[in-house]
Structures are given as C-alpha cells and as structure tokens.
Image (tube, rainbow, N blue to C red; front, side, top):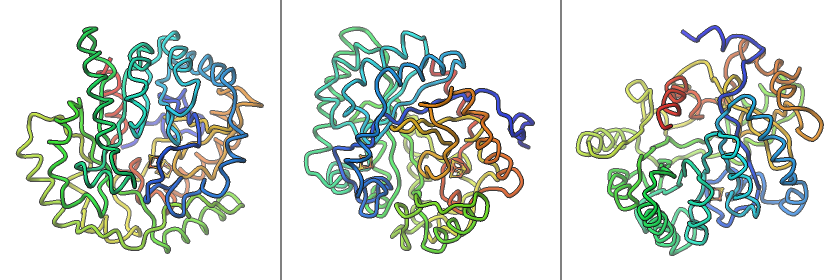
Length: 366
Ligand code: SF4
Ligand code: SF4
C-alpha cells in the first residue's frame, strides 16, 4: 500500500533534485531519446544552448535545495561538457549535500583530478556492453577504452589519497545489441572496478503507446506533448525469455558483484516487456512527482525527466518551493491520483523500481 504522504496533492520536499546542466552531448547514440535518430533535441540545439541558465542561477537553486537537504544529481546531455560543472559540484558539497553525476564517461580521462578535487560522491557511468558492443551502441570506436583509461586514473588517484569516493555505479540498459552478452556485464564491472552494476530494462514506446500517450496527455492537460517521438520503437529485437534465463544464471554465478536488478524482477515478464509497450508492469503509483524535482537547462522544472512535456514552473520566475507545490504541480498529482499512470509510463523505471528502498540505499551510501 502506498504511504499516505504520497497520496496528497501537496508534497513534502523532494528527496532528490536533478540538475540537467546542459542539452549538449559529445555522443549521438542511436537509442537516445534526446540525441538518437528521432531525438527531441536534434533539430534545435543552437537555440536550446542559448537558453541555458547561468552559474549564478544554478547556485541559487542549490541554496534553495540545501534548505530541503535534498540529494543533487547532475545530468544532461553530457554534464562534463558544462564548463562550470566543478564550481557547481564544489558549491553543492560546500552546502553538505550528496552529489552524483550521470555521465557517458568520455571526459573522465581529461577531468579525473578535478573530479577528485570536487569531492563528488558518486558517478553513474553508462557502459552498455563489452568493448565492441559498447562502441557500437555509442557509435564511436575507442569510446570504451577512453572511459576505462579515465576510470583507471580516477581509481589510482583515489588510492593515492586513500579515498572511497566517488563511488562508481555502472548503468547498463538492456537492448537489442547487448542482450545476448548481458551475462558478460559482471566481468565488465570488474574491469572498471565498479562498486555496483545496475541493469535497466529498455525504455521505449510502440507507435500505438506513443499515440495513446498523445491522446491521454492532451485529454488530461489540454495541449499536445511531443517527447514521445524520441522513444518510438516497434520492435525491440530482444528475446525476453532467453534474456530472463541469462539473467538468472548470471545472478547465480556472480555473488561477488553488487548487481542491482529490477525490484519487481520476479513479477515482470521480460517476454512481455520486450514484446511491446502496451502492457504495464510493476507498481501502479509512480512516486516521482512526490520525490523528485528536475530543473532543465533553461530553468524550467518538471517531474518526468525523460518526458519533459509537463512543466510545473520556471526558476527564473519562482522559488523552488513555490514550483514544487505550484498549481501546475498539484494538477499533475491530482490527475495522476485520479486517472493513474500515463501510457508512456508503461516502460518507465519509476514503475518497476521501489523508490522507498532507494531512499534507504541513498542514506546507506553516506
Ligand atoms: S551519451 Fe547519453 S545523452 Fe549522449 S547521446 Fe548517448 S544516451 Fe544520449
Ligand atoms: S512513471 Fe510516468 S509519471 Fe512517473 S516518471 Fe515515469 S513517465 Fe513520469
């Protein structure tokens, strides 16, 4: 049963504030909802770049998040492309907040000293397979080795300085290119000397789900969304049954690695998950609008980071607490409580992961 605090349209302060520092990325991965073939940022990057808010605006956001004691996660595009990122991390740490970064890892080799110096707590590192598979997915040869070189330098410096942080968590999304070698990921995790391996199911929408979302969203909120266009996939190319067998064996044989799989692993049929996106799994209640606030590079705020259609406020005009319980935020929660998840939620990790457990994990990480 969902706790009462997540059934109220007025929410307690968010546990996590996500700062999407930039739209820019130095890779153009095929499957990316932002930069993939039909990614939502592709056509408009110059314009989007000009809208990015200043470092003072980011500091102002951090000051406000500090009052909530929220955890801060930096992401993008590729956040290490943001020239002020280390000033921002140091500022977050000066406020005694936990700070993590989601990165494709390509720039770690260039910035490993600055990363250590900034006292960053955690790096979520996207590694999608063995050397060949990773480079194929990222669309650039040599990417895997470049990241590995950076991570090795980072570990060396950590050792020299006797530091545990930043922790390294590998993020790997299971797709058509890597599902057959997914059992090799624990070995990849060892090569990177990672603290954790996180396997995620593919986020996608069939044309039908995308269309259902467009209709349902328009009914609920009165305007057309467009983020679904970056995620349309009608054939995933993954045999869910074989995948399930592989993962079971992999978990059995790799006790030495901390592998984070899907919380609802036992109840989710991988066969159905990868066969299409019409069927919904997992929890019926997404906690994102109660736990997480995302600030986009232009200062606009939202709940669904991968589907930024519904904007609840703008940091250039309002304070974070006003935005968090703004009329628009309340309308989103109210309609969610009344009408349930949107069709696009069917393949979103917020419905299969247990975020109450995640909060405990955040505390445990210190
Ligand atoms: S590295 Fe990440 S943000 Fe950049 S194109 Fe690939 S998936 Fe998208
Ligand atoms: S499950 Fe739905 S409401 Fe929740 S974050 Fe995902 S897309 Fe947004």
